Length: 163
Figure 1 (tube, rainbow, N blue to C red):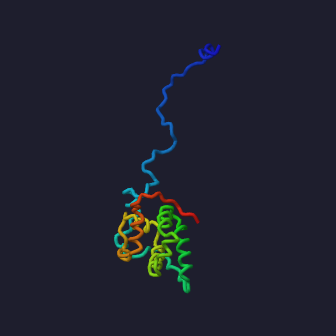
Figure 2 (cartoon, rainbow, N blue to C red):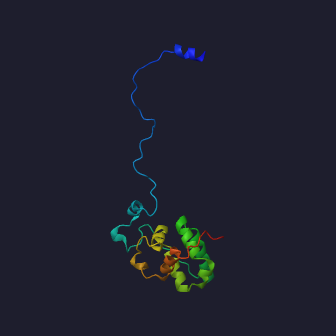
Figure 3 (cartoon, rainbow, N blue to C red):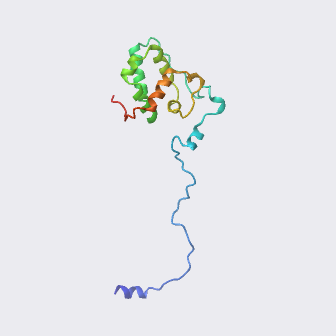
C-alpha cells in the first residue's frame, strides 16, 4: 500500500542550485590563540622602547608602614595564591611556600614583594625564560630562584598547595 501511494506522488525534476549546508561563515583564523605559540608571543610582545619602563597602567604599590615580618610573609603567601592567572598562581604558589618564605631574608622578601607588583604574564614569561626580563630584574636573585623552580629539574608533579 505504501509503495502504491509513493507512485501516485508526482515527482518534480526541477534543477536545484548547489547550496552550503551551514549558515555560519568559514572560520579564517582561530580567535583563541594558544599560549607560547609564535602568534601569541607576537601579539603580546611589549613595544621595543618599553623594555625598561614599567607598564603604563600600573598603580604604585600601597605603602605598608609598620608591617611586621610575620604579617609580610602571610600577605605574600596570600598574594602568590590569588593572582588571577592560573599559570602564574601555580608557579608562584609552589615556589613561595611557608617554609621557603620563612628562610628568606628581609631584603629577599622586599624584592619578592616588588616582583609581585609586576603583571602576571610578565612574571610567567620571565620565569619560564620565554622573554628576557627588563634591566631592573636582570640581576635579581629571587627571579633566578624562580627560574630554577620553573625548570622543575626533578620532574615532580605540582599542584596548588592546600590553604
